[in-house]
Length: 569
Image 1 (cartoon, helix red, strand yellow):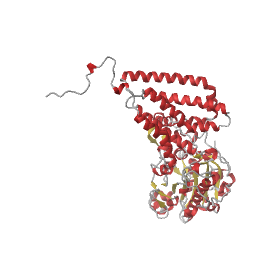
Image 2 (cartoon, helix red, strand yellow):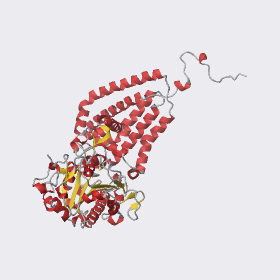
Image 3 (cartoon, helix red, strand yellow):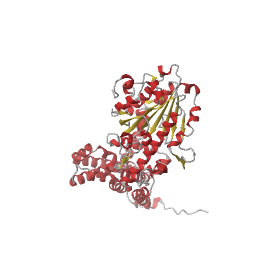
């Protein structure tokens, strides 16, 4: 028995007729236009807020520039979407744009940040703990309004289908039209846009979500700009200097890598609050004019442990080993303790331990530990290193959680909350300035305790070693100045508080004797301008490691041996 088909007979259709799935619904072009309008206007509220606050723009100029930029953003977005306006890609791509724009809008509005390559690297390297500290109901509400609402409407909207050939022609026509209109808008408003963008370079990093996509593209293109496939050797000629000849007590250098340390909030640098009572009791030299290589951990840590310096680090032709590798080449015992989100590659080839996941009562809560945990069992960890290397000398790095925000209140135990009331909200804009600064300063009080405790531990090692400590933060932090929070701004536009960092040195009498570097001498040059560029060479100098990659002119401690003031060539 034959079954009769219920499908319409194509031969019976009238010429030019189409199925209902083709001739009903909204045209893809109008979907692209509406989505681009939404993204260019509502999702760029952070850009419009910044434009409205520019002091050099009058009301009329601000409106003109805003309209011009909205047209540029909308047309550029429409041009990109028109390339992907196909049956199976249009909706997912628009949803991706909306979600990216929603997250970008929230963080730019909430913390006054901008989105560039450095910020995107930070985002990609953020771990679960850091992500959790950023979550709150304001973020959820923003994403639901800016992305959830249009995505639901888009998902329910039927899109009119066309044959592949007609869709290709339509997409090409839309692309050409948007490009032509974009050129026209730029020509008509060039003077207004160029003047504002030239005088306020941070605006280009607020164009949402094109800023995020451009940053991701820059990161993706990096392997084509530099060979990322291998780590090239560095300082393989390193050897120990004359101070190691017939030594009775080998050197023990503790390098404390601080996190988010504002130099200006350390009392030993002149801050009006007693944030560093422990360090004040020690014979230290605290440099007051030290500057970071970047404004984020991902940028600063690899840079400061390299020999390239900030000016040349990004343009280096390949990836090379760093400071810890050179120390290891020299025959020293090295160890990296990490209480944060990783060493960003600089400790990959040396012994390293993640202390953030330990379960030490009183020091660890949930999946996070206070920085003091790195001192817990340190003698045993050092004893586990090569005995032959330990006999020559030991270098230990402690990578702190420090003052990592926005949940500053989590960075200090209850016993160290000296300044109250304290902000306990990760939406920093909702905190009072007093509460925000109190929470941050309490984290410095605890950092001071950790450093003082580290010095106390080093003093117990003097019977069989010559100990020393160098503390240096990776970058600073914004605490609401000019409505900017956290860190990670492009270096060229970042405020000084994100770039000025504490650099503190403590030398035991035994270390002073073997190195011929006196703390009293260091104290004479506390205001000399130095930077992360000096770190690589200063550590090699402290440890008397001789290698062709060492530059004495960049060693801030060398002047106490040679009489030449510290500085940069």
